[in-house]
Image (cartoon, rainbow, N blue to C red; front, side, top):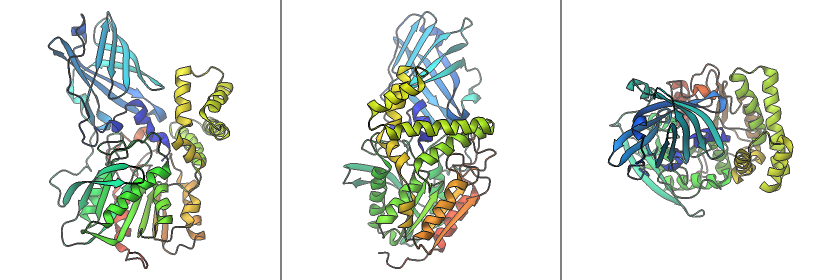
Length: 481
């Protein structure tokens, strides 16, 4: 939900390029260098970026000989992305610069004397990350992590690529509709992703949660529509300036599309939202009484600024920091968010941050920080309180949060969600804390984000069964069309 998930966009802007969702946005690779000395870097090079929460993302550069010079591509195995073109390469003595226009990033480093490593920095936007690349001698180290839950074709149901419009925003959304076998019409759901640029599978850290969830539900007799975020994959529009309210319009357009499908029972269409999607789903249901049910997965009940403060502290603790220092991390986050709230525009915000941090942050990074903290999405999110919308939701609601979630605390949010639904007079809702599960509903040890990619499980079987079982027990809500 919070822009923690933007970490992967900050490091490798892959999903936003549309590659992970199947759209080949990559230009045909051409030789990128004819300089002397390029032969020294021909080969495969592997390194790992360490980003927020101790998360490690492997980066691989494949550099080959080509007529007139070298040709190069880069992979992110832990995100399931490969073949991003390296648009330029500069080799001057031992200095190397590899740039990918598609990923909006570049590596700058130096070749070691023995020619088996390149030590340098990966830069992207305001971010700068140390990166040591080593020559690969064992190709097995390049394999993506095991993801045993991912379904393999042929599927025992129908799969269709679809498109529909959010006319109010002028966007065309692209997605995948999976339809059970047998005689319909079937109950159906729209899957609403968390924050940041997501493809239709909600790909993160090599996992495809929405692919796994859609497959499971469809096998149980529930039609599922999942889609690329606006500006991602095959969807049009601009994600950068969109708020949660804007994204709710895209999800509502998906709901309207399902109502027109003959295979779908229009009286049994619901919304499943993960993370930020967990506040968007109730937002829609509060104003659209055709929504038959809502499932929130790691959704929040408290305002966004409180979520981010708790997140800073919990992630720090899960990463091994003692409680005193973790509390200071939370306090620092609260202080920064206070500056954002007090600053009417980004000029004022930059001045406030400069006064607060007094040259501790380089200008380039400060500009990037201001752009992020002062973005329409961020300002909307930290001020948005989900409780009023929850009080207006009259359809059945299932709210699930994992007790090891360090991004959206179950202990902080589930009681508030329960209280808001109860205060609104909702007669059919359930709020459950799932023991041992993290923000992605994986069985986890600490819940730290750095575990996401290390865990083979994509979604706990218990969570999958809970979601499908609850939906299938629902009847047609009175008043639903």
